[in-house]
Amino acid sequence: MMRWIFAAMMAAATVSVQADNYSEDPRLRRLMTDWVLDYRMPKGWLQRQFINVEKQDGVLERFNRQAESMPWFRYRPIFDNDERALLGAAFWQEHAETLARAQAEYGVPAAVIVAVIGVETKYGTITGSFRAIDALTTLALDYPRRSEFFTNELRELLLLALEENREASSFTGSYAGAMGIAQFMPSSYRAYAVDFDGDGDRDILTDPVDAIGSVAAYLARHGWRVGEPVVVSARPPQGDPDRLVSQGLALDTTLQTLRTAGVKFDLLRGDTARAKLFKLDGADGPEYYVALNNFYVITRYNRSLMYALSVHNLSRRIERLRVVE
Image (cartoon, rainbow, N blue to C red; front, side, top):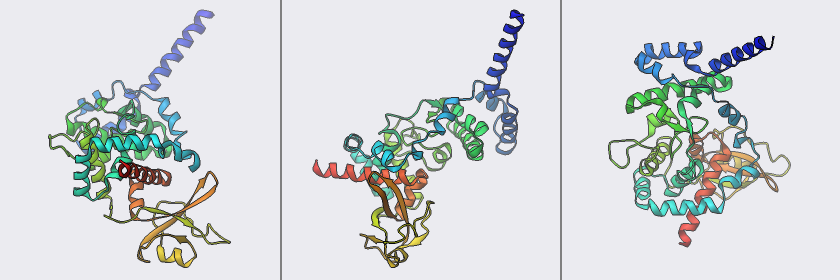
C-alpha cells in the first residue's frame, strides 16, 4: 500500500513539473503555429526558444503586490528621496556630455531623462534577473487579466531576438518583462531604442549612452513639448473639491475650465491648454495636482499617475543638487 501511495505521489509530482514547463503546452503551441504563419518565424528556431521555459510563480506573486497599489504617501518616498537624487546627480555628472546631446537632439530635459532611469532601475543598478521569455510566457498564459498585452509582448521579444540575432533566453529583466537600464518592454525596444553612441548596436541592456538616447527618443516621439511645464500643485474649490477630479490618465479638460470652476494653481499657460485635475492620498490628507501635456507623456512610459509624479519630483530634486554643485 505504501509503495502504491509513493508511486502515486511521484506521478503527481511529475505531472506538476510537466504542467509548469510550457514547451508542450497546447496554448503555446497554438501561438507558435500562428507566429510561424503570420510572422515567418523559423519553426525550429522558435521551438528551441521554449525548450526550458517554465511557469514563474514569483512573477505572478509580484504582479499581485505592485507598488502602484500603495497610497501615494507610501509610494512617494520610494523614489522621491535624497539618496536617489544624489545618485542621479552623480549619474548626470558622469554622463553630462551624452545628456546634453540627448536634450539638444530630442528636446527632453536632461533632468527628466535621468529621473526616468533613476525611478526605473536606480541608474542601471537594478535591472531585474528574470529571463524575459519566462516572465512574458507566464503572464501571457497564466495572467488572464492582461493576457493579450503580454502575448503581444512575448511575440515582440521573439521578433527582437531574431532582429538582433540573439537567443530570446539571453534577455533578462523585470518580472513584467521590461529590460535593461531603461526598462523597455520588447515592443518599445523594437520601436524606440536608438544607437546613440553610433557603434551599430542598440544596446539599452548594458550601455548607458544608448539608454539615455532611447529614453529621450521615447518621450520625444510620444509628444514631449520643449519648455512646457509638467504638473503643478492645485487647490480645489470649497464645497465640492472633487467635482472635476478624474481617475484616468487622459487630459480631459482645459485650464480655462478648471479656473472657471474655482481651482487655484500657479500656472501662466493659455486657457485652452489641455489639462487634468487629479488627487492623491498624501500623508496629511488629499493632494491635488493639475497635469499638462508633458505629464501625460511621462505616463506613456508607465501608465501611472504616481509614477509620473515621482519622475517629476525626482527630476526637480536632481536639478536642485546640480545648482548647488
